View (tube, rainbow, N blue to C red):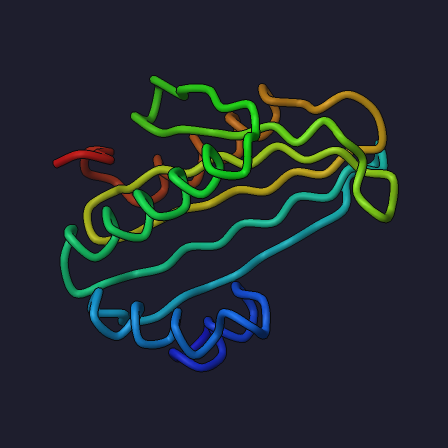
Length: 145
């Protein structure tokens, strides 16, 4: 579990932390959790769940993240099963991995999944992890309201 400072330090680049800490405070940050693991196939998966005082805060974070994917010219897609969106970065990073990210909102919780593989981006695997996380929260998923 992370407090506000721990969340900002783990989620954002150093040059963005002061601004994002203020934004998280405005959004009503409550707490955050992060979990990651490596698969037998060499893939890496990371889950971030961030709780806010209201759905509005979670939706605001979701809107900013999904807008950044489009601004960075990443290929985006809709994950209609959880009313979420995702992005694919097919260009390998400095470690030679490609990345799929998916995000959604369930109530007052923002959920982001990042999945890294050394081959083809695996949207289905990332979506499956997101679905499990959303299901674990109960209620209904909503990015828009």
